[in-house]
Image (cartoon, rainbow, N blue to C red):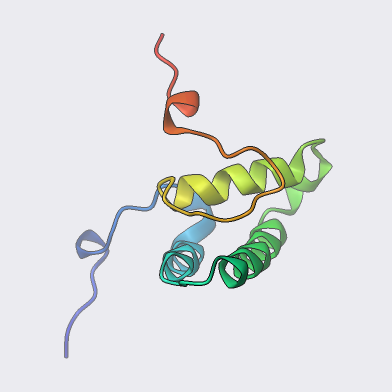
Amino acid sequence: MKKNYNYTRCKLFLPEYGRHIHEMVASLLEIEDRRERTRQAKAVIAVMGNLNPLLRDTADFTHKLWDHLFIVSDFQLDVDSPYPRPSRQDLTVAP
C-alpha cells in the first residue's frame, strides 16, 4: 500500500480552497478542447463560490473567483474568461 503524505503532494497555491479544488483545476489543464475546458471551468467557479459564501457580499465576487482560478492553476489555464486574465506580475507588486 502506497502512503500519500501531504509533504509528497504538490503545493497548494490557495489553501483555503482545499486539495479537491486544486485537483479539479489540475484536471482542467488536461482537457484538450477549449470550449469544454471553459464549460468545466465555469462549473469549478460555481463550486468555489459555494465554498466561500462570505465572498458573495462583495461587489466583484465572480471576478475574484476567476482570479483565484487562474492563481490556483499557476496562471497556466487557457479559458475564455468574462474578465481580463491576471498576470503574475500584477499580483506580485514590489514594494
